[in-house]
Amino acid sequence: MQNEPAFVSSASMAAELELVANIAKDMSIGVKNAKAIANRAGQKARGFAPITDFIDEMSIDTLKLVNLINKESTMLSKIAIEELRTRDARQKFLAIKSKASGAVYISTLDCSLEKLNTTQQENHAKLLKNVKCLKSLMDDISQKMAVANVIVANSRIEAVNAEEYRQNLETIADDIDKSCEAIRNRVNESFFRLENAMQQWKYQNR
Amino acid sequence: MKATNIYEQGHMWVMFGRDPDKPDGIIDTNQYLVKTNDRAIVLDPGGIEIFSSMLSALLHHVSIDQITDLFASHQDPDIISSLGLWDQALPNAKLHAPWLWEGFIRHFGLSSIEYAAIADDGGTIDLGGVKLEMVPAHYLHSSGNFHIYDPVAKILMSGDVGAALEPISADIFVDDFDSHVDKMKMFHQRWMPSNRAKNDWIRRVRKLDIQMMAPQHGRIFKDENVGKFLDWFEALDVGNAIK
Image 1 (cartoon, rainbow over the protein chains, first blue to last red):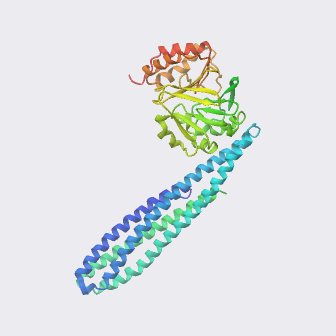
Image 2 (cartoon, rainbow over the protein chains, first blue to last red):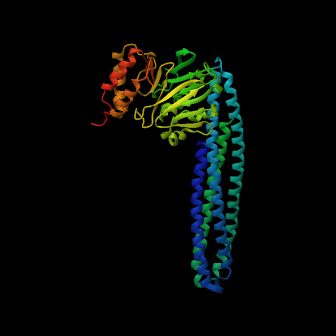
Image 3 (cartoon, chains in turn orange, green):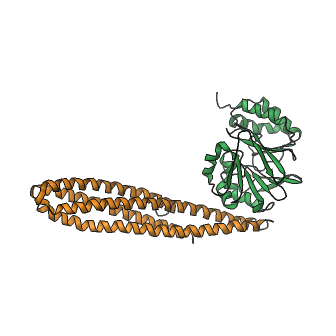
């Protein structure tokens, strides 16, 4: 992963986050199950119902965020490819300028080179904007997961009072905890890939 | 890359090829420039690997803004995989290429250059008064394929027809036709799929007044060697991979 090109890192990131979407979907199903149990438990699990509502909402929000991140990381991959092609063309044109420096019409290449410089600058600006947006979306997910940690801790306390439903509710709390942990890991992994993509890009543009 | 003027009378034909900087393992190709007073077309501009050598060589003969047209006889990578780079160099140019391959050739990268699709019957490119005819050569070898005929210079740019597999040290023109046959035989038998297409092309090409037949690989045929090639090709059984 260390030396993979930016367009590979961003495409891999999109795939990585697709898995987060699946976890969030599973979490949403798990929460519906928890709601049914909390309803059956009635007064014994009265503290559990708002918690399930919150987790349900959080999994829907996470899904929305993942979809947005997916779009942005696919866009990042496209920009990175465009950037790579422009850079490649620019390097080739510069090599031609040096190789054919004595050619009668060599100066007529300057206009194309100038356009490539402009395109490259535009691509850089787009890339930076896109990365900023991606980081902010990933931050949002990470924050949601941090809140989820607190909620899971609360739900364990509520489960203790649910008597014969206690074990069921504890299992549900464990599942949510595992899902949040998996999401956190995936997002961290994606963040690492994003950082790597940026480092590669900076290295190639020294 | 070696550049050879093959015609200069009012307008100009230059052949580019025999590239010593070409990476090993890729087939040597001939590219052609037709230049008039204020415009120029590059015929079968070549693969991505030779782009730098090709453009460097071209700039000795023509300015960037003078290259208004490109022509791709068919879709193969050695013909036009450099398109994405030409697209960056010539944003206002036109690419004349078979309609059949438009959706495929665009995969090489095309956002600025205009794709001028050639209909099956061919057509004419008017290069500032010099008219170049696009002659159908379907199935020779590609299913959508054209050659370029210049009736003033009497040159037929014949794409893969007449091609020979030779090292980059090979001469530009065929001198001894009989000894050249061995270098062409397998290429034509294996790459050309249809005797019917071949014979139809020969019938039409015999009606043209040709002094030079310029293929995309190998050597150029001049004068009587053009007729010798047509006779040899007519007698050759092609599509020999089917036993």
